[in-house]
Image: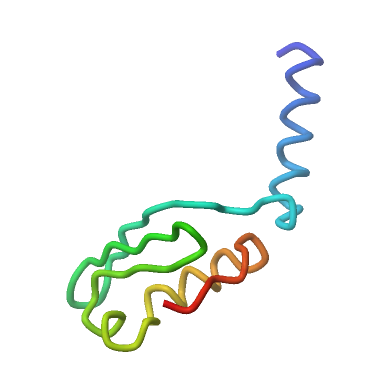
Length: 80
C-alpha cells in the first residue's frame, strides 16, 4: 500500500473518532424490534417511524435509540 493511501486511512480513522464532524441530513433505518421490524427515517429535521406509538406520541423507542446512537451527529429535530 502506498504512503498516500496510508495517510488517507489514518485520516479517515481520526475523522471517525471526531463525531462532531458529522451532521446527518436524511436517512432511513430498519430496526429489528422485539416483536416487529420498524422503519425509521430522519429528513427535513424530523423523525418518522412506522410504529403505532410514534403516530400517537411523535416519539418512540426506535427514534430515541437512534438519537442515542447518533448523539452529537444530528441537528436538534423539530417536534413531530
